[in-house]
Length: 102
View 1 (cartoon, rainbow, N blue to C red):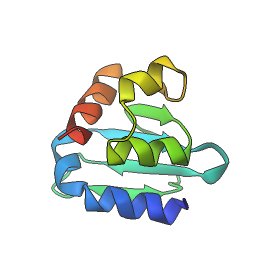
View 2: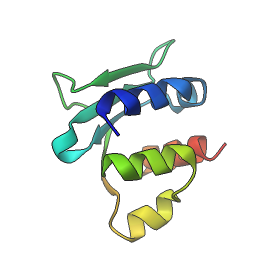
View 3: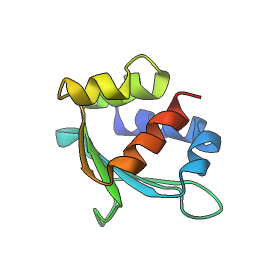
View 4: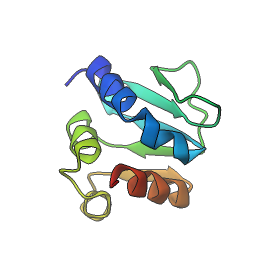
């Protein structure tokens, strides 16, 4: 899965993600980073942003991110098993998790 495919998948779910009202950086290791900014009227998804500033950073593989977005991996299980690391606000990560479950 490429970074562009991840961005495309996020854009498909932008209606749900609009409710987040926060910024989340997805750190995908060597694959790059994706910044999700749901603070404005429209969701902005930026691959490899110039700045890593976000309220919460989620570190995981592209494979696990795709599974999370498709509902094939429970976020709590991923966190417990170490497949997902959360830096910053855990509350925002939980809110994102509940939005993806819809």
